[in-house]
Structures are given as C-alpha cells and as structure tokens.
Image (cartoon, rainbow, N blue to C red; front, side, top):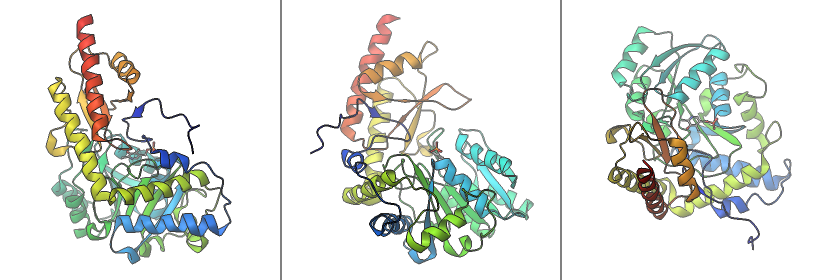
Length: 373
Ligand SMILES: *Cc1c(COP(=O)(O)O)cnc(C)c1O
C-alpha cells in the first residue's frame, strides 16, 4: 500500500533520532485536528496513560506530561518547574547530558551544586550521600541514567536509595534508557523521569515527556521560569482533555502511538531490552575481534550505545565513517575530551542480523584502510 515511500538509504546506529519501522513512518501520513476527541482522547490521553504504565505499577501515583521540542526541552521544563525559587539542585554529572542540566540551572538561575566526575567514572552513591549531608539545603537531585556521551549506565538503584534516604526529590534524565531498560520508577522512588519520542520507544523526533509524581507536580504552580516551558501549566491543560496548550506535533504524536503499539507487540520493555542486549553483545564481540577496544569496562557499559577507541594514531574517523556509510550504516562521532572515540548505537529498528552485516562492512573497510597504509 505504501510502496511509493522510498526506504531509508542507511540504518542509523545513533542514539536518536534513530531508525524507525515502516509502521511508524507510515503513521505520519494523515492529518489530525488538535481539538477533536479522535486526537485528544484517542491518541494523547491514551499515550499518557500508557507511558505511566510503562514506567511503574504504581500508576495512580504518577501522571505523564508531554512537551513540544526535543528531549532537552522536556528536561529544562522539568527542572524549571520542579524547583521552587528557594530550591537547590544537586546535579551528578559524568558526561555532556549531565553537564547540560547544570547549564540549564545556570541559565534559569536555579541554585545548584554540580558533583562533577570524569566521563569514564561512575558516581559512588556514598559520595552522593556525603554531599547531601554536607548540604542540607539541597532539595532536589538530578542524575542521568544512561549517559549517552559514553554509553555508561549510572547506578540508578543505588543513587535513588541514598537520595530517598535523605528525603530529597529525585529527577532522572532517562532519555536514552526509558523503554529499553526495565525499571520501576515507583519502587525506585523516582519523582520525575524525563525521556523523549525518538529514543527507545522508537518514535520520530518532536516531543519529550515527563512522568511525574502527581502529589509533587500539584505543588508546582508558579514555579516555572518560562511561559511555554511550564510543565505544570501544560499538565493542567492536558489533564483536562488531552489538549496541548499550544500547537502539538500531531503527526509525531500519532507515530509515537504506533511506536507504543509496536513496543507492546515486541513483548514490552523486557523483550526490547533483550534485543538491544543481543545487538550490543554481538557488536562488542565482533569489534573486539576486529581489533577495536571499548572505552568503558563491561561492568559500566549500557546496552544502548557503545564507545570505541580509535584503533591507532593514524585512524581517520571521517574516512571510516564515509566508507561504512556507503555500505549502509551511519555511525556516531565521539563526544568526550579524555580520549579519541566514536560511538555505535544499538537502539532503534535494528536487529542482530543488522549488526552482523555492520561487522562485515567494518571488516571490509578496515581491511581496505590497512592496504592503503
Ligand atoms: C538524547 C538525550 C537527551 C536529549 O537530547 P536532545 O538533543 O535534546 O533530544 C538528553 N539526555 C540524554 C541522556 C540523551 O541521550
């Protein structure tokens, strides 16, 4: 039926936007009215309910708010609304996305302390606990779950335990892990979780979302430092009828609904996690066989995205990238200061067979490059 849509020229092995299914892309092909119940009730409210159910079994304690823009917009709306004027935010950072939260706090003039760690170091929960007891004025703690900068999976369970023991509000940037790694925000005590349409749910880019503890969000009236990025205002309107305050990205939202259907059809977050794990396992095993080393030890590594070190001083990422792209796969440059790396994502409409083909392509490219030298 949709034969006229050209298929993608290559697979994106990137951390989002990522390769989406044909079903998701086809769902973009009709228009929606933003005040009609077909859209507000049928799509928006349905999505909000399903997001809460994906995040926790304690569904009555949480609510979901969708926010226009990329994932960072939702993070900024979240901290800009969750923190009252006299609040103070501790931000645990070990990569670009953690640092971005600190930048947001700076711009929004939110009092904050950054616990800054090297990009290849995982936060020690005891150090977080020590900081919290040293600074009793801290009200909120923010941490990134999967630091997409390196691919590190931060110890969310242990950090939430110390944050909850100190009775602080916990904000988690789970942008690149939500939907791809199973965890329950209710049992971890997470108060705000932020993610977006174009990561592990495998939708197209255009909005982010916050899954918030209802009893806390209710107290956030008047906190926002921005009219448009007021998570509370957006929630108040959206909760009534599913209507977004300002124009909603209708096609993107409908495609996300399809992506949620496909996540369910795959077997839910657990099944998706297994697929990503298998992608990752094959990738690392294959790349090591080709002489590449990972930046992180396996114990700190997420199945979401993997950083590889340049194999030698002569390695030219750009040439490598172009040659691999010609063979149908798009990789991602590195983003860290301490080492020369590039990244390969395992998420999206990507299967173990795609990884096997990728490894064949890299084998061919690396062989050719060696012949040139
Ligand atoms: C993708 C991502 C974001 C959001 O980035 P945008 O470019 O705004 O979509 C935030 N945090 C993490 C950990 C991410 O992976």
